[in-house]
Length: 320
Figure 1 (cartoon, rainbow, N blue to C red):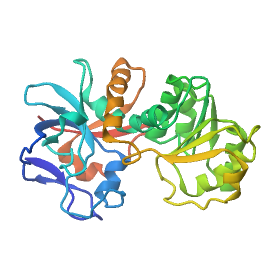
Figure 2: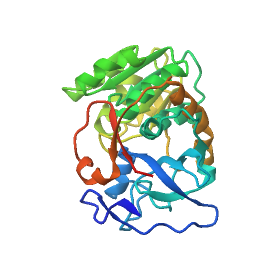
Figure 3: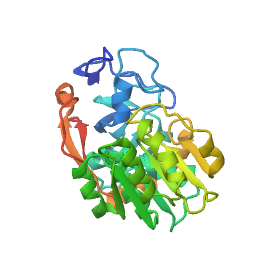
Figure 4: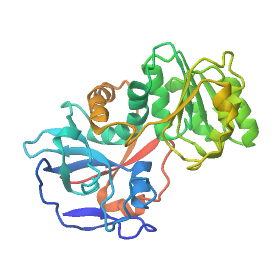
């Protein structure tokens, strides 16, 4: 078969022939129809993701839309030890797959499920989020952040504060459900002050930035809260701005801050998969929107580093 193959962590994958995986107990060989190029895929392909074992060669891709031997189409999440999804075929564990409705667009599903899943699962599994609460999305101008704005409003958030750097993407977020937008551009200290003023009394933070912006934002938000004993759930999902922060000890004593992560390990695979059918329904119904750029898998090397339009996600397709 053909696949995107990573043979060096410092080069994009190349389209080449690769051995078709042998079906194993509990796994089914499926035709891959579409697989999204997510940040999680990039970090796996360059060896920087925390689950990377350093072994090469590898086929990247963490999820996709596949066709089972009986013709049914499913969305599935690949096992950590299975070949990636950017190939004509891969192995699928039926316990990590959900059927797609006949009218589901494989490209849209492949583009949207991974970025949407992060905030959908976080708000439904990591915290007891209730309609009427308020949410800050830190890093809202990325694809996952844009989906998080939509999802927070869809799940009943009364107030969604969207903070991000890209002014073009920031301008689009009120149309997706943001009630307030905050620019993270310019002086970092001033940006943190803007975040603190706009999001002082939110109930939940969905954080895709981490690093220096989060390090400044946490005290800025907490010191402005009307009632510091009111719980604030800070959910760390991404680390676009850096993997580490320095957290002053006083913020943990002076406010009711609960920091947690949402991702592989903090949630069981079964818990994540249990949320997928409802998310598929929302995407198929058009409740949540996503822009996709479908490209043949054969173009993977060129497309890996090519710029895309704001809000658009590359989805590799096969002729299967």
